[in-house]
Image (tube, rainbow, N blue to C red):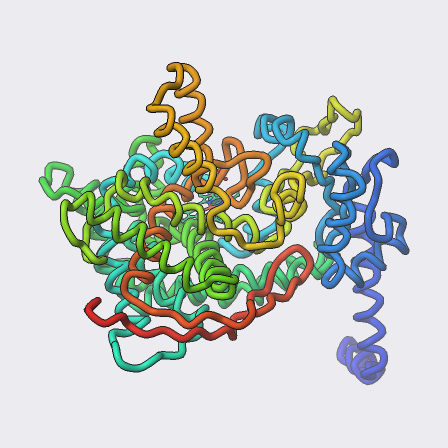
Length: 552
Ligand code: HEM
């Protein structure tokens, strides 16, 4: 009997009916999802098509292509005048309240139990699926605690990888120009250099390990794009299939990392009396942090290898994208060759002065010498200002059950609402940055140089307090200083803790590149494509390079 019914059901299935069932299920899921999303007060202005049911559907349809212009419109009409507004979102995500720059401090000073960074990241990256449900707060805490204090010791090793990775990727031929895919070139450098800090000397040169980490990070990005298009209630059905590739790439990386992690655990935990000094890298820091917090479950090779994943993800593509944009900006600007020459002059002079002789790119960088590269710093900082890779990088989720009320405008954001800072509008605001669309590499070093020139003229005759104030203001021009006006690393207590590392890494990379290679300028900057709030970089871009004579 049961077989008969099943047979009849099966018989009645036609392609048309299957399509109709799927369409109905999809519509019902979207409707259910829509009703579950947080609702925002009517007093907040909207951009896009508003948040009625029909308006929401239109927002979803045009989200991929119009999001950046909606944000720009909201910035000009509202945020610039100190007003928050609501921006549309992709189908799988709630709309967000864009908080104006004037209220950045209010937003970022809210405690984590009211506005949560962790929950915002978890929601945006679909952490529960993509990182196998592992809480990323333990590795994030570890980075906050250990990275900055170990920077000085990390620099020589990082420099060694910079030289090795660039030589291997850019080549050593001084006779012929070489055409390079720029995106792949940065992928040949950054994962190795960054992994010197994450897993140390041996594993950072293991190409299969690096490839699996990069592939894992790609999976997270690509799945994130896809998942945001699905209604949330669909995800438990579809996400497990997509993340099979995340699991596969983690597993491949784990097979390479396991011997190293097991040895580190033996040296640091099991043979406590051993006098082996562990190298300072993330694996060591995770073990120390687990011991300090009494978390024995963390002292497991498989767990430790999963803890590395969120940091690899946070570190690699952000840095690759930044380096990629930097060279595109430098090579396509008016005076491409003069800019490179200026950076070459500065990096060569500073390292030579420090070493008391002619160093020519082979010198050893230190924290002090790198901090003297003001123009190089400014060139990177300016590229991060102008060529941002997302319209916003600071998101918070309201986790207080009672929601949160903004004291200035009086609007209320309920539990589950999302708040964000508008990076694109801020970075391209002509009232903050003159000629904001122009790449002006010395935008941030000019003021410092003018001040130093003037101080020399005065014979350093400032009062002590004036001098201290000026020194502080000048110091804030450096690329690691965040502010409501400069948000590539976000701002506040959750601002990127990797930025001190990145600043050193990128300066060493740029110094080595300009000292050892010639570049042909680009006639125009290859154009990126925006999908919603994220950039799809022009990964096909190619550059031409040649090793400088005498540099080998
Ligand atoms: C140019 C490269 C990078 C950029 C542009 C960048 C940018 C950011 C941004 C915008 C955030 C979000 C902060 C927030 O939500 O308020 C962040 C968080 C974070 N980044 Fe980076 N990052 C970079 C490189 C790195 C590197 C190399 C590391 C690791 C060593 C790293 C580790 C982290 C961590 C652990 C967090 C989470 C901080 C927290 O939630 O408290 N980042 N980064």
